[in-house]
Image (tube, rainbow, N blue to C red; front, side, top):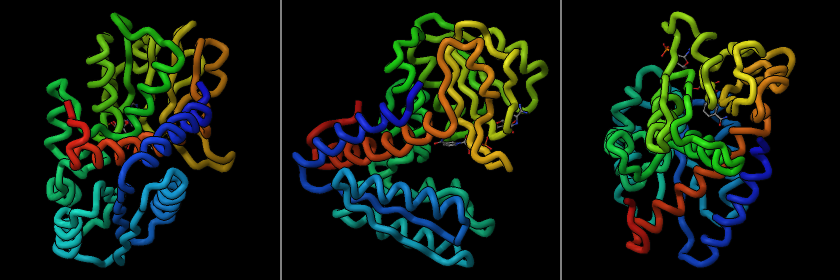
Length: 277
Ligand code: NAP
């Protein structure tokens, strides 16, 4: 499954939406100097400017207090010119990350991490949904992967990826199993999956023979190794799966594209042009 090609199409659609509306503004907040976070923020800003979204880069030093971060979030919430706010994770240890997420205006929460947005997703009334799970679902739709009644297995239960993917698959009428680090026999679970989504952050966690023949496999994992960037699934799984996302070039580009789409969605909702369901 080619994430780069689909992401390019999504970005074109976003650019055409942006051209027909007052320019949306996305504010990103980066606390500290984690190199991976710096890279992700850079990619998001570049992608935003390419589609015509105004991206504002707010950076705070690593020793910033929680009160200062909350103060910045409060100011961005109150700024009518800001449509979307993204607080880059991880935050330094002195800052309670869930508390910062709770402080976001849910209508500007383009990462979909505020409890209200997480709760609406759980209730089957998605408003702003995390970008990576949206990207996973868009790839499955693009490749006409049938989810109705399918056995879907998600490896990972994070708030950013595993749990929201599981909710979206459930809403699409898949029969969903969520695996995690305490799962007793991971291979038995993955081998039964018609649709397998792996988001554990462990290189080669899913070996070739753990994948069902003819299945669709989405590899969310991004692991930096001596051999370069690799996913959580052994690429040899392509010999058994009908469809597999590459790493890089699969979910990664989709995440950024869906963040842009979420920013437009938030802007339209705020301006009353479209309402969240
Ligand atoms: P996370 O918060 O670290 O969660 C990892 C999950 O995997 C946890 O639920 C953990 O179980 C589970 N897990 C860990 N080891 C396992 C094992 N041996 N067997 C089964 N389950 C295991 O990570 P995340 O934020 O969800 O991200 C997951 C991966 O996706 C990372 O590599 C991350 O870099 C990547 N990612 C990529 C994108 C993208 O755009 N491509 C976006 C987001 C994340 P417990 O809950 O029991 O600890």
